Amino acid sequence: MSFVALWAVAMAAHAQGKTADEFDESKMVYKSNPATLSNQRHTGPFAVGSSLSFDAAIKPLDRARVKTIQIDTTHKVIDLAPGVKFSAWTFGDQVPGPVVRARVGDTIRFSMTNRSDEIAPAAISFAAPMMHSMDFHSAMVSPQDKYRSIAPGQTISFEFTPNYPGVFMYHCGTPMILEHIASGMYGVMVVEPRNGYPTKVDREYVVVQSEFYTKRDPDGRKIEGQPLYVLDTERVRAKAPTYTVFNGRYNGMVDKPLFAKPGERVRLFVLNVGPSNTSSFHVVGTIFDRVWLDGNPHNELRGMQTVLLGSSSGAIVEFRIPEKGKYIMVDHHFANASQGAIGLIDASGGTSEREIEHNNISVTATPIDAPAAKGKANFENKCLACHAVGGGDKVGPDLLGVTKRRTDDWLQRWLMSPQKMLASDATAKAMLKKYTLPMPDQGLSEDDARQLIRYFHWFDEQGKPAPAGAARQP
Ligand code: CU
Ligand code: CU
Image (tube, rainbow, N blue to C red; front, side, top):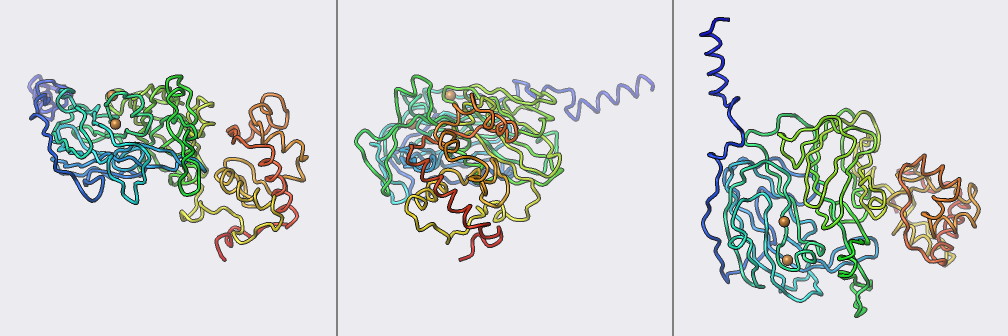
């Protein structure tokens, strides 16, 4: 090639921006108008905007260059775990808050009313109204101006332009920040590179890990007949959570798996909120072909088994679903996984969501014997996420025939203290090897365990329960 031809190629590449710095500071936006405050409150829905998603299945990018989003704060009791109704503070009336999706250079026109003083039927609240604020890690703005706290009934509005791509945390920044985050005030903002991602995928999901620090309400208040749980401020300071979960719910994505098909490529936007612990995010059965630390493709790692995320660290992980199966997402710090940081990507070839949700137990069949009936209720509450009866192995073994495989005495010890058994008992150790995930300690009393075993005996005496297809029929 002649010198002139080389020169022409170089100039063409330059014109296409190939030699330009993607993060050229001279192109970044550092100025924005001062935030405005008003006493005009939002009414109606607590979160509005076409660039918002409300669950793990994140919507594709909204192409509009200006994105108007409303995310209000509320106080609300959330279902954190079976039987655990937790008094939370929220963005958009959900924990985590809605996912915002934008791209570098977009204008984000944000507004928020502090609606912590509203008692709507859908937002039963036990917490007193209080100041809240919004801090977007994706923005470069003056915290004293944009992130200031507003009183109940006030609305704050401001604009910003994300300069960097990433999986960014947003959260309330009102003191005590630790308590506001531990109460549920956080969410994710995904910022795409100006020209999109360099790879193609078939599915995209958002996974947010966070800790909860709960105790029974000292005043003994109840909601819908169940005890209320509130923030345990001592546990928060001791960094000793009672739950560590994905997307705001204990074993949430075991109950409602994410879907994929064998052979597909999956992109997960992962954020570890903390507030205080680390996540070692892992998907059992595959390898991340790409990890973009903090969600920026510039920070690329290849062929990773886990990605280590400190508090407020994000990542995009991409991987192929190699073959038919259920791929388990965990925090590989297994003490955290056992507190609920578990989810499933279901690529078992099921054709419908209904099939996955099947519990394989005939809903009409309930033991007449009272302890066994109590055992059944407890089973459906605590065990069904991971075990089937006669429907095959799920995360844990199929329990049909369990009373023929194990003695009552063994089952009693196993149900009451799985951790102790895993340390000392050969059968328990063998099960862990087979099923990978340790059975979480469910905090069962002696009676709870006895009733569960009565129920196990009951279904084993029934012979095989209703076939899977009949499970939800009357
Ligand atoms: Cu707050
Ligand atoms: Cu922050």
